[in-house]
Amino acid sequence: MAVGTTVALSASGGFGGLSTVGGSAGSSAGLSAAESAVIRNIQSQLPKAKRTARQGHSQRAWKQLRMRKGRERHEDAVECVTFSFGQVQKFFLTTPCRKLQRWQYPVIDEAGNEMLVAVSKVTMRRTSQARKFKDLIDEHGTGDIRPIAPLVPFTGHHYDSKTRGSSVIFAETEPLRGDPSAAVLDATATAAVALTW
Image: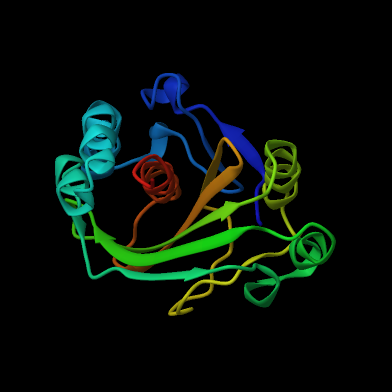
């Protein structure tokens, strides 16, 4: 995965205790009013949207962030080697995952920018293995889980991840249409991770 620096958006009016991880994350200094509004909406509505997502209402959760989620593709697998590459694939050869879930969908923000979101949930056999996998996938240039349909190249620069027990959830975003800033792409990745269960 491509990960450079950790940017705490709270320092620039962002997510409070949350942070996004990305090699090209920006600060609010160069953001337009529309982009700042997108980030503020995510910041203020994410706790509510997470509760909605837990109830199985993904579309409604994104609407609460004032973003529109397009058609979702979802695939499950019982192994990870086939769907990975690089050091990540080598890791799975010696430490097999128990389950792989992948999602891919577009989202459109209030400014009309369309972004492609790819989310993966890797479930390992043990919590310690999940932590090791997260350390690896969070490092830039170590490989990745392949997206369901690579409509655009995923750079990994707009990325976030978290562990939940023996599972690791991570998301990447890339622009499809319009010109979303790095900060908006990063915030969208953070939201995608938070809304995945």
